[in-house]
Length: 240
Image 1 (spheres, rainbow, N blue to C red):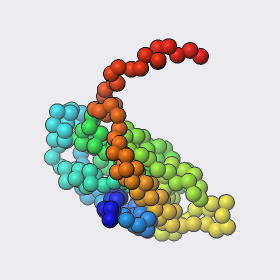
Image 2 (cartoon, rainbow, N blue to C red):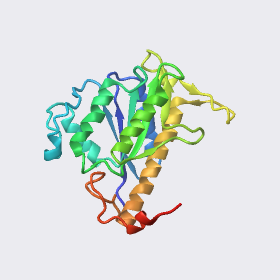
Image 3 (cartoon, one colour):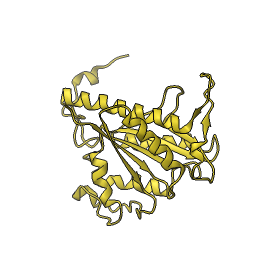
Image 4 (cartoon, helix red, strand yellow):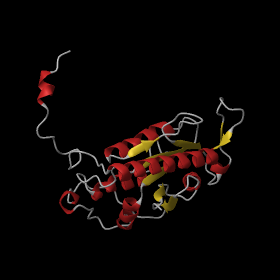
């Protein structure tokens, strides 16, 4: 029997509240996909410095900054999918989330050690148009830069990831509802997060099966830092 895929849910909020609730709801949905093992990580209370651009990781293959990020690398590498959730601060992710994202460079810029892992994004803001989509765009860009495979939520609505609207109460996410227009009733944000986690896990199972069956990896290692040799001569002969 094949080993289960591993889905890591990360709450990149400095508090333990609504972002954590929706990430946990997504992990419950992931578990419902079957053959899935889940892992939950809260960054609240952790000391994670931003990348200082020293570039020593280029030679060492790992970040040299000694703080609470170091124990997290193993959990990132073991995961087949990463669901990253953050509150929205001034139209983008939290500073804690940004530092976490920057420090992944320590896993190897050219090795792309997160490549082909599935990515899911969750953004929680204080109003319906409070910067959730700009935050999701930034999280999805991080997935792309790492050669990950971002997953949106397309049923029963289309968006780049999961969003929530909450206030100062750390349990507002339990009462947040989404009016879907196209279905006869509203859906709670926690239920949407559950559906999203289930989709992320299902796509991860599909990707794992494809990788195992084909044995394929990304071409042109080091990834994004080399050119094919030679390019096909037909490229120089193209005409409109």
